[in-house]
Length: 291
Ligand SMILES: Cc1cc2nc3c(=O)[nH]c(=O)nc-3n(C[C@H](O)[C@H](O)[C@H](O)COP(=O)(O)OP(=O)(O)OC[C@H]3O[C@@H](n4cnc5c(N)ncnc54)[C@H](O)[C@@H]3O)c2cc1C
Image 1 (cartoon, rainbow, N blue to C red):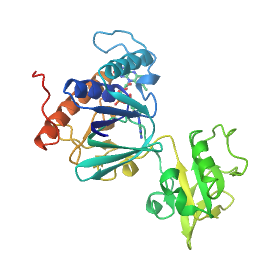
Image 2: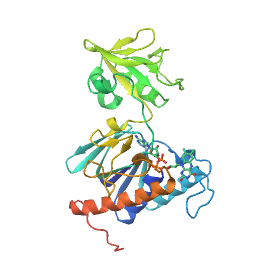
Image 3: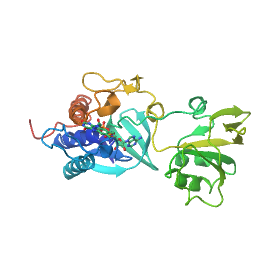
Image 4: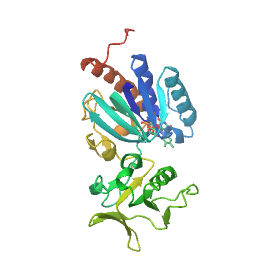
């Protein structure tokens, strides 16, 4: 199925966008990896109409509201959004979805890349075991992991190749396959040595045919490199569209003020802009209800 709109992020901005999208009769898919900033707020005192509400409760109500209006929620880390002509292809977890428009609502989660990482993406470094694992069948790969979510993917890779597992941040590895060799050193950076990629560590490092970097968050430059950013925020026009036609943005991802009301307002504006944009592109019929 091709959704009218895929919303990446299930926080205040994403839920608000989903509610408005459904009100405008758009099919809406919300892809989210966790609870974001709102899930961490002990008490939110300045959201109109709901004084002193715990952040997780407000988030739960927003999700219930959007789901009740017919938005589809799916849990998964979005790794890549690819513009493919009239549609966008979205890789979330191990699944691929398709939509006519996209709203980026991923909050402020930032990823610090390791030295050498960016230059080797696609040339020995990959972020997706499912997409690229087969290229290393019978070889050796290093998994650089910063969360327990990486364990399952590393186990999958171990069915194809010899795997070295190196932790960027400490996490539970009790479910790691016994076939995988753990490296008890932190990765410091990467460089090529001939056809092999060296993961640098304090004691020197180790070589492999490829490296899979598996983190619980994805840098904007990997998720959709075509989108322009400035000072760690995506750049939006007055309709909240990014530099990529059909890709909009809402909430903390667009920069200060980092506030729930602003995120919800952005989500509403972005969804209305999507509805207008789809009609202008001839990709969506106007909603029946006039308002
Ligand atoms: C401790 C704390 C207290 C706060 N108190 C207040 C307050 O009192 N009042 C106030 O107005 N604001 C407060 N804020 C700020 C407020 O929480 C944020 O401004 C608001 O939550 C932003 O909404 P958002 O939807 O843009 O981002 P978020 O709420 O951060 O949601 C981002 C969503 O994107 C998802 N995501 C990220 N990357 C990916 C990916 N690659 N794939 C799939 N999903 C992804 C996350 O899992 C999450 O679901 C507080 C923040 C914190 C941390």
